[in-house]
Image (cartoon, rainbow, N blue to C red):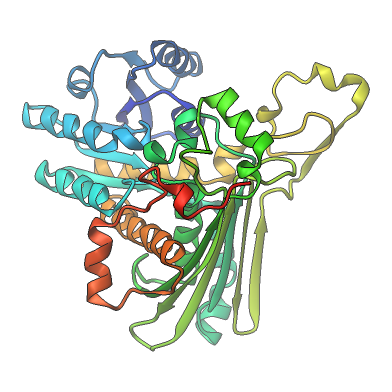
Length: 417
Protein backbone atom coordinates (compact mmCIF):
# COMPACT_ATOMS: atom_id res chain seq x y z
CA UNK A 1 0.00 0.00 0.00
CA UNK A 2 1.29 3.45 -0.94
CA UNK A 3 2.02 5.67 2.05
CA UNK A 4 1.30 9.36 2.33
CA UNK A 5 4.34 11.00 3.94
CA UNK A 6 2.96 13.80 6.08
CA UNK A 7 4.81 16.87 7.27
CA UNK A 8 3.40 18.50 10.40
CA UNK A 9 3.63 22.21 11.18
CA UNK A 10 3.13 22.67 14.91
CA UNK A 11 3.68 20.20 17.76
CA UNK A 12 1.13 21.23 20.37
CA UNK A 13 -1.95 19.52 21.76
CA UNK A 14 -3.83 18.99 18.47
CA UNK A 15 -0.72 17.68 16.69
CA UNK A 16 -0.22 15.07 19.41
CA UNK A 17 -3.89 14.10 19.26
CA UNK A 18 -3.63 13.56 15.50
CA UNK A 19 -0.45 11.56 16.06
CA UNK A 20 -2.39 9.23 18.35
CA UNK A 21 -4.96 8.89 15.57
CA UNK A 22 -2.31 8.09 12.96
CA UNK A 23 -1.24 5.04 14.93
CA UNK A 24 -4.54 3.63 13.65
CA UNK A 25 -4.13 4.70 9.99
CA UNK A 26 -2.26 2.38 7.63
CA UNK A 27 -1.86 4.74 4.67
CA UNK A 28 -0.25 7.79 6.32
CA UNK A 29 2.90 8.38 8.37
CA UNK A 30 4.53 11.42 9.92
CA UNK A 31 7.75 11.95 7.97
CA UNK A 32 8.56 15.46 9.11
CA UNK A 33 7.92 17.96 11.90
CA UNK A 34 8.64 21.66 12.17
CA UNK A 35 7.68 23.78 15.15
CA UNK A 36 8.75 26.92 16.99
CA UNK A 37 8.71 24.89 20.19
CA UNK A 38 11.84 22.74 20.14
CA UNK A 39 10.92 20.68 23.21
CA UNK A 40 7.46 19.89 21.87
CA UNK A 41 8.88 18.94 18.49
CA UNK A 42 11.27 16.52 20.22
CA UNK A 43 8.41 14.99 22.21
CA UNK A 44 6.27 14.52 19.09
CA UNK A 45 9.18 13.08 17.13
CA UNK A 46 9.94 10.59 19.90
CA UNK A 47 6.29 9.56 20.03
CA UNK A 48 6.25 8.97 16.25
CA UNK A 49 9.47 6.95 16.21
CA UNK A 50 8.69 4.88 19.31
CA UNK A 51 5.32 3.85 17.90
CA UNK A 52 6.60 3.15 14.39
CA UNK A 53 4.42 5.36 12.23
CA UNK A 54 7.11 7.44 10.54
CA UNK A 55 10.57 8.86 10.97
CA UNK A 56 9.35 12.13 12.51
CA UNK A 57 12.41 14.06 11.31
CA UNK A 58 12.59 17.55 12.81
CA UNK A 59 13.26 20.29 10.25
CA UNK A 60 14.19 23.92 10.95
CA UNK A 61 11.58 25.33 8.57
CA UNK A 62 8.67 24.56 6.26
CA UNK A 63 10.94 25.19 3.29
CA UNK A 64 13.35 22.48 4.45
CA UNK A 65 10.61 19.98 5.28
CA UNK A 66 8.53 20.47 2.12
CA UNK A 67 11.08 18.64 -0.08
CA UNK A 68 10.81 15.47 2.03
CA UNK A 69 7.03 15.02 2.39
CA UNK A 70 3.99 14.48 0.18
CA UNK A 71 1.54 16.66 2.10
CA UNK A 72 1.62 19.16 4.95
CA UNK A 73 -0.76 19.49 7.90
CA UNK A 74 -1.22 22.93 9.47
CA UNK A 75 -1.58 22.56 13.24
CA UNK A 76 -0.27 26.01 14.16
CA UNK A 77 -2.21 28.48 16.35
CA UNK A 78 -5.04 30.25 14.52
CA UNK A 79 -3.17 33.55 14.25
CA UNK A 80 -0.42 31.86 12.19
CA UNK A 81 -2.57 29.98 9.65
CA UNK A 82 -2.23 32.41 6.74
CA UNK A 83 1.50 32.99 7.29
CA UNK A 84 2.06 29.22 7.45
CA UNK A 85 0.16 28.68 4.21
CA UNK A 86 2.12 31.43 2.47
CA UNK A 87 5.34 29.58 3.35
CA UNK A 88 3.90 26.30 2.03
CA UNK A 89 2.93 27.96 -1.26
CA UNK A 90 6.39 29.50 -1.55
CA UNK A 91 7.96 26.05 -1.08
CA UNK A 92 5.67 24.59 -3.74
CA UNK A 93 6.65 27.35 -6.19
CA UNK A 94 10.30 26.57 -5.49
CA UNK A 95 9.81 22.98 -6.59
CA UNK A 96 8.50 20.99 -3.62
CA UNK A 97 6.42 18.11 -5.00
CA UNK A 98 3.53 18.52 -2.60
CA UNK A 99 0.24 16.79 -3.34
CA UNK A 100 -1.99 18.47 -0.78
CA UNK A 101 -2.37 20.44 2.41
CA UNK A 102 -4.47 19.84 5.52
CA UNK A 103 -5.77 22.53 7.86
CA UNK A 104 -7.20 21.79 11.28
CA UNK A 105 -10.30 23.83 12.09
CA UNK A 106 -10.85 26.76 11.85
CA UNK A 107 -9.64 27.65 8.37
CA UNK A 108 -9.32 31.29 9.44
CA UNK A 109 -10.24 33.60 12.28
CA UNK A 110 -12.65 35.42 9.97
CA UNK A 111 -13.94 35.20 6.40
CA UNK A 112 -11.16 37.33 4.96
CA UNK A 113 -8.49 35.00 6.36
CA UNK A 114 -10.38 31.85 5.32
CA UNK A 115 -10.82 33.21 1.78
CA UNK A 116 -7.09 33.97 1.66
CA UNK A 117 -6.36 30.34 2.58
CA UNK A 118 -8.61 29.07 -0.23
CA UNK A 119 -7.04 31.46 -2.73
CA UNK A 120 -3.50 30.44 -1.77
CA UNK A 121 -4.28 26.74 -2.21
CA UNK A 122 -5.80 27.38 -5.64
CA UNK A 123 -2.83 29.53 -6.63
CA UNK A 124 -0.45 26.68 -5.79
CA UNK A 125 -2.75 24.03 -7.31
CA UNK A 126 -2.76 22.08 -4.05
CA UNK A 127 -5.49 19.65 -3.08
CA UNK A 128 -7.00 20.43 0.29
CA UNK A 129 -8.52 18.80 3.37
CA UNK A 130 -10.39 20.77 6.03
CA UNK A 131 -10.26 18.81 9.26
CA UNK A 132 -13.65 18.75 10.96
CA UNK A 133 -13.48 15.51 12.91
CA UNK A 134 -17.05 15.35 14.22
CA UNK A 135 -18.45 14.70 10.74
CA UNK A 136 -16.26 11.57 10.67
CA UNK A 137 -17.38 10.29 14.07
CA UNK A 138 -18.42 6.66 13.83
CA UNK A 139 -21.60 7.23 15.89
CA UNK A 140 -22.64 9.95 13.40
CA UNK A 141 -21.97 7.73 10.41
CA UNK A 142 -23.60 4.71 12.10
CA UNK A 143 -26.86 6.53 12.87
CA UNK A 144 -27.04 7.71 9.25
CA UNK A 145 -26.63 4.13 8.04
CA UNK A 146 -29.04 2.69 10.62
CA UNK A 147 -31.75 5.25 9.86
CA UNK A 148 -31.32 5.23 6.08
CA UNK A 149 -34.55 3.24 5.44
CA UNK A 150 -36.53 5.61 7.67
CA UNK A 151 -35.04 8.65 5.99
CA UNK A 152 -35.84 7.33 2.52
CA UNK A 153 -39.39 6.45 3.54
CA UNK A 154 -40.26 9.47 5.72
CA UNK A 155 -37.84 12.18 4.66
CA UNK A 156 -34.62 13.59 6.16
CA UNK A 157 -34.07 14.98 9.65
CA UNK A 158 -35.65 18.36 10.29
CA UNK A 159 -34.07 19.28 13.65
CA UNK A 160 -30.63 18.66 15.10
CA UNK A 161 -29.03 19.82 18.34
CA UNK A 162 -25.27 19.75 18.75
CA UNK A 163 -23.14 20.66 21.74
CA UNK A 164 -19.47 20.55 22.68
CA UNK A 165 -18.52 21.59 26.18
CA UNK A 166 -15.56 21.38 28.55
CA UNK A 167 -13.90 23.41 31.30
CA UNK A 168 -11.64 25.50 29.06
CA UNK A 169 -8.62 25.32 26.72
CA UNK A 170 -5.08 24.17 27.51
CA UNK A 171 -3.11 27.01 25.95
CA UNK A 172 -2.88 30.73 26.71
CA UNK A 173 -3.40 31.77 23.08
CA UNK A 174 -6.72 29.90 23.00
CA UNK A 175 -8.03 32.21 25.74
CA UNK A 176 -6.85 35.36 23.92
CA UNK A 177 -9.63 36.39 21.50
CA UNK A 178 -7.29 38.44 19.32
CA UNK A 179 -5.08 35.40 18.70
CA UNK A 180 -7.65 32.62 18.67
CA UNK A 181 -10.37 34.57 16.83
CA UNK A 182 -12.88 34.87 19.65
CA UNK A 183 -14.01 32.63 22.46
CA UNK A 184 -15.89 29.36 22.58
CA UNK A 185 -17.95 30.12 19.46
CA UNK A 186 -14.79 30.37 17.37
CA UNK A 187 -13.11 27.47 19.17
CA UNK A 188 -15.90 24.90 19.32
CA UNK A 189 -18.98 26.43 17.70
CA UNK A 190 -17.48 25.60 14.32
CA UNK A 191 -17.63 21.89 15.28
CA UNK A 192 -21.28 21.99 16.34
CA UNK A 193 -22.36 24.08 13.36
CA UNK A 194 -20.64 21.69 10.93
CA UNK A 195 -22.03 18.48 12.42
CA UNK A 196 -25.53 19.97 12.64
CA UNK A 197 -25.48 20.95 8.97
CA UNK A 198 -24.14 17.53 8.01
CA UNK A 199 -26.69 15.47 9.93
CA UNK A 200 -29.57 17.47 8.43
CA UNK A 201 -28.29 16.90 4.89
CA UNK A 202 -30.36 14.39 2.85
CA UNK A 203 -28.69 11.12 1.89
CA UNK A 204 -26.39 11.31 -1.10
CA UNK A 205 -26.15 15.11 -1.13
CA UNK A 206 -22.99 17.17 -0.67
CA UNK A 207 -22.20 18.68 2.76
CA UNK A 208 -23.19 22.14 1.47
CA UNK A 209 -26.41 21.05 -0.25
CA UNK A 210 -28.77 22.63 2.28
CA UNK A 211 -28.87 26.41 1.93
CA UNK A 212 -28.31 28.41 5.14
CA UNK A 213 -30.95 31.16 5.22
CA UNK A 214 -30.67 32.67 8.69
CA UNK A 215 -28.66 32.64 11.93
CA UNK A 216 -29.75 33.71 15.39
CA UNK A 217 -27.15 33.48 18.16
CA UNK A 218 -26.21 34.69 21.62
CA UNK A 219 -22.81 34.94 23.34
CA UNK A 220 -22.16 35.44 27.04
CA UNK A 221 -19.33 35.56 29.55
CA UNK A 222 -20.57 33.66 32.59
CA UNK A 223 -18.08 31.69 34.69
CA UNK A 224 -14.82 33.22 33.42
CA UNK A 225 -16.14 36.76 33.87
CA UNK A 226 -16.38 36.35 37.65
CA UNK A 227 -13.54 38.01 39.63
CA UNK A 228 -11.99 34.84 41.07
CA UNK A 229 -11.97 33.11 37.68
CA UNK A 230 -10.61 36.18 35.87
CA UNK A 231 -7.78 36.18 38.41
CA UNK A 232 -7.09 32.50 37.70
CA UNK A 233 -6.86 33.20 33.94
CA UNK A 234 -4.47 36.07 34.56
CA UNK A 235 -2.37 34.00 36.95
CA UNK A 236 -2.25 30.80 34.89
CA UNK A 237 -2.20 32.14 31.32
CA UNK A 238 -1.44 35.86 31.49
CA UNK A 239 -4.77 36.67 29.80
CA UNK A 240 -6.73 39.58 31.30
CA UNK A 241 -10.50 39.22 30.84
CA UNK A 242 -11.09 42.61 32.47
CA UNK A 243 -9.51 44.15 29.35
CA UNK A 244 -10.02 41.68 26.47
CA UNK A 245 -12.75 39.21 27.43
CA UNK A 246 -14.14 36.46 25.22
CA UNK A 247 -17.37 34.50 25.50
CA UNK A 248 -17.37 31.24 27.45
CA UNK A 249 -20.93 30.31 26.41
CA UNK A 250 -22.79 30.49 23.12
CA UNK A 251 -26.00 29.13 21.69
CA UNK A 252 -27.91 29.67 18.49
CA UNK A 253 -30.07 28.31 15.70
CA UNK A 254 -29.28 28.12 11.99
CA UNK A 255 -32.17 27.68 9.59
CA UNK A 256 -31.61 25.80 6.33
CA UNK A 257 -33.70 25.33 3.19
CA UNK A 258 -33.74 22.25 0.97
CA UNK A 259 -33.36 23.69 -2.56
CA UNK A 260 -35.13 20.70 -4.12
CA UNK A 261 -38.21 20.56 -1.90
CA UNK A 262 -38.34 23.89 -0.09
CA UNK A 263 -38.37 22.04 3.26
CA UNK A 264 -37.10 24.08 6.21
CA UNK A 265 -34.76 22.45 8.76
CA UNK A 266 -33.11 23.83 11.87
CA UNK A 267 -29.84 23.13 13.65
CA UNK A 268 -29.27 24.32 17.21
CA UNK A 269 -25.74 24.65 18.61
CA UNK A 270 -24.56 25.13 22.19
CA UNK A 271 -20.96 25.43 23.36
CA UNK A 272 -19.26 26.34 26.61
CA UNK A 273 -15.96 26.57 28.44
CA UNK A 274 -17.76 26.13 31.77
CA UNK A 275 -18.81 22.49 31.74
CA UNK A 276 -18.31 21.22 35.28
CA UNK A 277 -18.76 17.47 34.86
CA UNK A 278 -16.24 14.72 33.97
CA UNK A 279 -14.52 16.45 31.05
CA UNK A 280 -15.17 16.98 27.35
CA UNK A 281 -18.73 16.16 26.32
CA UNK A 282 -20.04 15.94 22.78
CA UNK A 283 -23.81 15.71 22.55
CA UNK A 284 -25.80 15.43 19.34
CA UNK A 285 -29.37 14.45 18.66
CA UNK A 286 -31.74 14.69 15.73
CA UNK A 287 -35.44 14.40 15.01
CA UNK A 288 -37.01 13.21 11.77
CA UNK A 289 -40.60 12.36 10.91
CA UNK A 290 -41.15 9.34 13.19
CA UNK A 291 -37.52 8.64 14.09
CA UNK A 292 -34.62 10.11 16.10
CA UNK A 293 -31.05 9.57 17.29
CA UNK A 294 -28.92 10.67 20.26
CA UNK A 295 -25.16 10.62 20.92
CA UNK A 296 -23.47 11.45 24.23
CA UNK A 297 -19.73 10.78 24.46
CA UNK A 298 -19.84 10.64 28.27
CA UNK A 299 -21.83 7.42 27.98
CA UNK A 300 -18.88 5.04 27.94
CA UNK A 301 -18.79 1.22 28.10
CA UNK A 302 -15.99 1.63 30.65
CA UNK A 303 -16.25 3.36 34.02
CA UNK A 304 -13.79 3.39 36.88
CA UNK A 305 -14.09 4.48 40.50
CA UNK A 306 -11.28 6.17 42.42
CA UNK A 307 -11.77 6.86 46.13
CA UNK A 308 -10.34 9.73 48.13
CA UNK A 309 -7.74 7.52 49.79
CA UNK A 310 -5.93 6.82 46.50
CA UNK A 311 -6.87 9.83 44.35
CA UNK A 312 -3.42 11.35 44.82
CA UNK A 313 -1.95 8.40 42.90
CA UNK A 314 -3.75 9.42 39.69
CA UNK A 315 -0.98 10.41 37.29
CA UNK A 316 -2.95 12.11 34.50
CA UNK A 317 -6.73 12.20 34.37
CA UNK A 318 -6.64 13.22 30.70
CA UNK A 319 -5.45 9.77 29.70
CA UNK A 320 -9.02 8.71 30.46
CA UNK A 321 -10.88 11.68 28.95
CA UNK A 322 -9.83 14.90 27.22
CA UNK A 323 -10.21 18.01 29.43
CA UNK A 324 -10.89 15.79 32.45
CA UNK A 325 -11.68 17.88 35.54
CA UNK A 326 -11.68 15.19 38.23
CA UNK A 327 -9.38 12.40 39.39
CA UNK A 328 -11.68 10.68 41.89
CA UNK A 329 -15.21 9.36 42.10
CA UNK A 330 -17.06 7.53 39.30
CA UNK A 331 -15.29 8.44 36.06
CA UNK A 332 -16.11 7.75 32.42
CA UNK A 333 -13.15 6.36 30.47
CA UNK A 334 -12.95 6.58 26.69
CA UNK A 335 -10.21 4.09 25.89
CA UNK A 336 -9.84 5.24 22.26
CA UNK A 337 -10.77 8.91 22.12
CA UNK A 338 -9.19 9.66 18.72
CA UNK A 339 -11.32 6.95 17.11
CA UNK A 340 -14.48 8.01 18.97
CA UNK A 341 -14.08 11.57 17.75
CA UNK A 342 -13.34 10.64 14.11
CA UNK A 343 -9.65 11.58 13.88
CA UNK A 344 -8.33 8.40 12.21
CA UNK A 345 -11.15 8.50 9.66
CA UNK A 346 -10.52 12.09 8.56
CA UNK A 347 -6.78 11.40 8.25
CA UNK A 348 -7.43 8.29 6.18
CA UNK A 349 -9.87 10.21 3.97
CA UNK A 350 -7.30 12.96 3.33
CA UNK A 351 -4.50 10.48 2.62
CA UNK A 352 -6.47 8.45 0.10
CA UNK A 353 -7.81 11.56 -1.62
CA UNK A 354 -4.37 13.15 -2.00
CA UNK A 355 -2.85 9.91 -3.30
CA UNK A 356 -5.63 9.85 -5.93
CA UNK A 357 -5.03 13.49 -6.84
CA UNK A 358 -8.32 14.71 -5.34
CA UNK A 359 -9.57 17.03 -2.65
CA UNK A 360 -10.69 15.37 0.56
CA UNK A 361 -14.38 14.90 1.42
CA UNK A 362 -14.27 18.30 3.15
CA UNK A 363 -12.12 20.70 1.05
CA UNK A 364 -11.12 24.18 2.14
CA UNK A 365 -14.06 25.67 0.26
CA UNK A 366 -16.23 23.90 2.84
CA UNK A 367 -14.12 25.33 5.66
CA UNK A 368 -14.75 28.79 4.20
CA UNK A 369 -18.52 28.22 4.39
CA UNK A 370 -18.25 27.14 8.04
CA UNK A 371 -16.25 30.30 8.79
CA UNK A 372 -19.03 32.38 7.21
CA UNK A 373 -21.62 30.73 9.47
CA UNK A 374 -19.47 31.31 12.57
CA UNK A 375 -19.03 34.97 11.63
CA UNK A 376 -22.78 35.26 10.99
CA UNK A 377 -23.38 33.90 14.49
CA UNK A 378 -21.01 36.50 15.97
CA UNK A 379 -22.75 39.19 13.94
CA UNK A 380 -26.15 38.07 15.23
CA UNK A 381 -24.98 38.08 18.85
CA UNK A 382 -23.20 41.42 18.51
CA UNK A 383 -26.06 43.18 16.70
CA UNK A 384 -28.77 41.37 18.67
CA UNK A 385 -30.75 40.38 15.61
CA UNK A 386 -31.39 37.45 13.32
CA UNK A 387 -28.98 37.59 10.38
CA UNK A 388 -30.61 37.03 6.99
CA UNK A 389 -28.14 35.04 4.90
CA UNK A 390 -30.25 35.44 1.76
CA UNK A 391 -29.53 39.18 1.80
CA UNK A 392 -26.67 40.05 -0.59
CA UNK A 393 -25.75 43.11 1.50
CA UNK A 394 -25.28 40.85 4.55
CA UNK A 395 -23.09 38.49 2.53
CA UNK A 396 -20.89 41.41 1.48
CA UNK A 397 -20.68 42.60 5.09
CA UNK A 398 -19.57 39.15 6.25
CA UNK A 399 -16.60 39.25 3.84
CA UNK A 400 -14.87 41.88 5.99
CA UNK A 401 -16.65 41.44 9.33
CA UNK A 402 -14.38 41.10 12.37
CA UNK A 403 -16.32 40.64 15.65
CA UNK A 404 -15.64 43.13 18.43
CA UNK A 405 -14.60 40.21 20.63
CA UNK A 406 -11.96 39.19 18.06
CA UNK A 407 -10.74 42.80 17.93
CA UNK A 408 -10.10 42.71 21.68
CA UNK A 409 -13.15 44.91 22.35
CA UNK A 410 -15.26 42.23 24.00
CA UNK A 411 -15.89 44.44 27.04
CA UNK A 412 -18.27 46.45 24.81
CA UNK A 413 -20.58 43.46 24.28
CA UNK A 414 -19.92 41.07 27.19
CA UNK A 415 -20.92 41.52 30.82
CA UNK A 416 -18.34 41.08 33.56
CA UNK A 417 -18.89 41.34 37.32
